[in-house]
Structure formats: C-alpha cells, structure tokens
Amino acid sequence: MDATAPSHPYYPRTASIPTYVANESSVLRLLMTFGLMVGVVIGLAYWQTIQSPLRLRPIDRFAVMWFALCGFLHVGFEGYYVYNRTSIPELQTVFGQLWKEYTLSDSRYLTSDVFTVCVETITALAWGPLSWLTYFAILTNSPYRHINQVIVCTAHLYGVALYYGTNLGDFRTTGVSYSRPEAQYYWVYYICLNAPWAVVPFVFLYDSYKQTARAFRALQAPEAERKAQ
Image 1: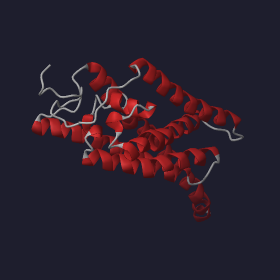
Image 2: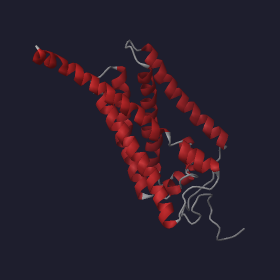
Image 3: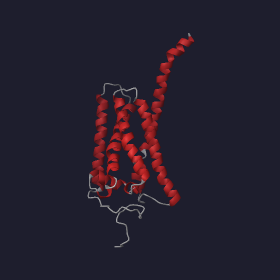
Image 4: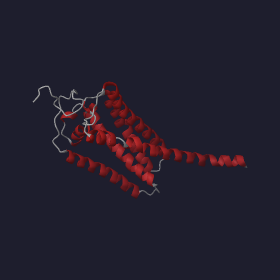
C-alpha cells in the first residue's frame, strides 16, 4: 500500500480529512432509511392537507408537503451537519453516515469550507424555520403565507445558485473538483438531489405573484368603481 495515498475516498485527493472512518452501513441501507424519513414527513404533511377544513388547491397541498420537507431537511439534516461538522468524518450515526455518503459528491462539507459552513448555518437557522412557518401559514390560511413563501423561495434560488456557482467557479479557475468522477456522485447526488431547489421555487413564486396581484385587484376594485361612478 502506498504510504502517501490518501486515507479517504474523497476528491480532490489532496483534501485533508485525517479523522475519516469508513461507513459501517451499506449505501442501500442508508438510502432506504433516509427515504423512509422523507416519506414519513411527506406522508404526514399530506395527511394534514386531507384533514384541513380549508379548500386547498393542488398547488397548496404540494406546497404543504414541500415546505414540511424543506423544514425537516434544513433544520434536521443540515442543522445536524452544522452542529457536528468537525466530527462528521468519524461519526457512525445515521445522519453522520449519510453526510459521508453525500459528500462523495462535494467534499467541501468535510473540510469545513467557509462558504459551505456559512450557507448551511444560514439555511438551518433561517430558511428551515421559515419553511415551517410557511407550511403552517398554508394550513391556517394565514395572510402572511405568500410573504413567507416569496422570501424562502427566493432564498432557496439564491442559495442553490451560489452552491452550484462556487463549485463550478473553483473548477473553472483552479481545476479542482470536489466530486468523485463517477456519475452516481456528480450527476445523481450533486446535480439531481439539489435540482428541485432550482426548479420548485419558481413554481411557488409564480403562484405568489398571481395570488398577490389578485388580492390587490380585489382591494382596489371598490375604489375603481367609485371613481367610475
């Protein structure tokens, strides 16, 4: 065995991750466990839309499930990373092992990259709770629903743009790749798993745009009628 070979499977191969310990659980088991967690969160959120006395539109039901999931991921999963970021490489907890698996697509998480730590901290402390507030606002027909929705969706788009952009920028300027070359890691983990946050927010922003315009038209209608008389 080459004594100079890195003791971890991450890219770039020169990354310093001295405390790395290989996962004990198989990838299949980890993904099934995580999938079950996500399924429970989405299932409970959908059940709440069915039980709601409100006449929810299909997009409202989708939004309830989406923001419930975002809150879980931001506060639970990403918050776990922020709190344990220095010890993740050696952890054998479910979330610890999941992070070690995901970071095969982006090793910045295991090297305490400044941008990554900052953006994940903001996400866990701000956008996670705001996602849950939006989720509750929809179920309670709160007038603050669309304000919350616009803020968190804009934050998601901004965050994912920076996430993709900083990675691509480093690769273009220095040639450094943080992902292993296999398609599973770059295209499935890095691109596909993050892509929903580059697409779904546009759907909700468009809906908020329409609903806000509709509300203002209704508010301004009596005044317009008075002027027309």
